[in-house]
Amino acid sequence: MKSNPNAKVIFMVGAGISTSCGIPDFRSPGTGLYHNLARLKLPYPEAVFDVDFFQSDPLPFYTLAKELYPGNFRPSKFHYLLKLFQDKDVLKRVYTQNIDTLERQAGVKDDLIIEAHGSFAHCHCIGCGKVYPPQVFKSKLAEHPMKDFVKCDVCGELVKPAIVFFGEDLPDSFSETWLNDSEWLREKITTSGKHPQQPLVIVVGTSLAVYPFASLPEEIPRKVKRVLCNLETVGDFKANKRPTDLIVHQYSDEFAEQLVEELGWQEDFEKILTAQGGMGDNSKEQLLEIVHDLENLSLDQSEHESADKKDKKLQRLNGHDSDEDGASNSSSSQKAAKE
Image 1 (cartoon, helix red, strand yellow):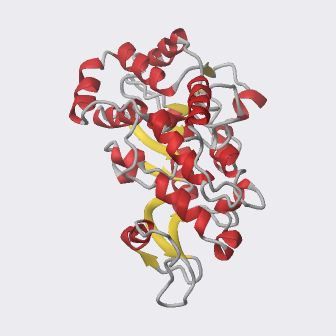
Image 2: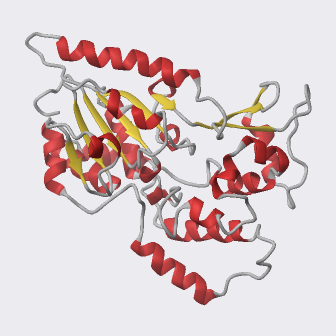
Image 3: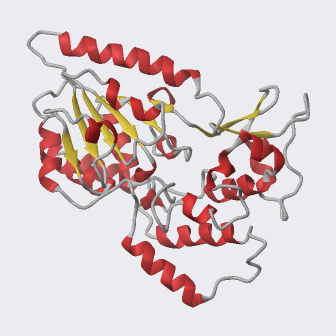
C-alpha cells in the first residue's frame, strides 16, 4: 500500500473480526455457537438458521437473536480499521458474512458494505416477502416469556430479520456488486500510467467454509495480490496458493494495529477509537452470558450452572478466541502495509 498510495482495498471478512467484541464465531471447538447450540433440543445445531425449523419452532432463533441483536456489542479495533480505510479514501468495499451490523456501527457507509448473509437491519415475511422495520421484531425480544412471535399482517406467516437462512437465496446485491467489483479489479490491473493503482484484497477472520462467499477469493484475478489474516490457512489460500499470496497468522485486532503502525496512521486511528470511548474488555463475560441463556432453553437443564463450571468455561475461553484468528506475525503485517 505504501508503494501504491492510490490503490484501493476490498475486504472480505467473517466471524473472526467480531469475536473480540464478545460475539462467538460458529465453528470453534468448545466455544463456537454451533458447539453451544448442540446442547439444545435441536435436530442439529444449524437448525436454528433453518427456515423449516424456524416455522415449526421460532423460540431458539428468538433467544439467539436477543443475545446477538445490534446494540448489545461494540465494534472491534478491526471494525474501526475499516472506518479508517474509508476515511483515507482507500476502501473499495467490505464483503462481510457477519449479521451483527458492526461494520455499520463502526461508521462504514452502507454503500460500501455488502452483507452477504443479510443482517438485522431489515425484516421480512418468510411467506410473502413483505418488508417490516426492524423494531417490529426487536419489540418482541423484550417480552418475557417470548411466546407471541411476529406474524405478517398480509399472509399470516412468520416475520424474521433479513438474515439468510439455510434454504434461502443470498441477497441480489451480493452477486451484482461482486460482478461489478471483479470487473473493476480486472480493469485496475490493466491500467497503465505514472500512478499505479494496483488493488489489494484482504481476507480476514473467516474459515471460507460457506459457499458462495467462499468462492470469492478463488475468483480474484491472478494478478491481484491476496492477503489472508486467519488462525489457519483456509479455502483457496490452502488449496490453490498463489506465489503472490501473503498469509498472516494473527489476531485480527493485532493485524489492524500493526497495519496502522506500518502505514503511519496511528494518530488518526487513535482519534477514531477515542471518539468511540475506547474499547470494551468484557467480551468473555458477554460470551458466557450467551452460552448460559442458550443452555436455559434445554429442557434437560433447569438449574443454573454453578460458579465453578462458569470459572472453568472462562478459563477455556481465555485459551480459545476464534477459529478464524491466530497467533501474532508482525513481519507479515509489515509486508501487507508495503504492498
